[in-house]
Image: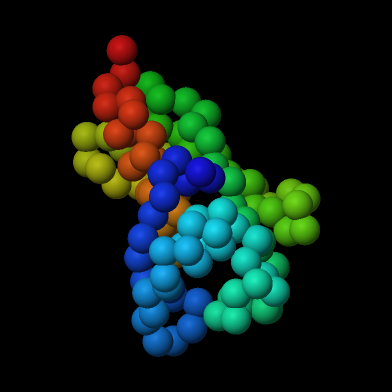
Length: 117
């Protein structure tokens, strides 16, 4: 799974809050590339998927790097830092979608690797 685990939640693609069925969540929301397959997907959004990786986990700081994909090619990239002790992002982007997905990804990572050893 791109975010480490399957996730449930409300769709925020449109103004009203909507909770998709499990099949839609697993096939579209959790995997990316929903454009043309999900009627709620914002067609003006150039992002098809956002992929994450843990680049470093040291001294209570976790560096999360990401690549934004469009048509299966890199479209943008960047990094965030997460502080283990505070349980929060140290840096922000002003992009709620990337930040929320990064938090989901790091939560899955921490479930598998609770402490640096």
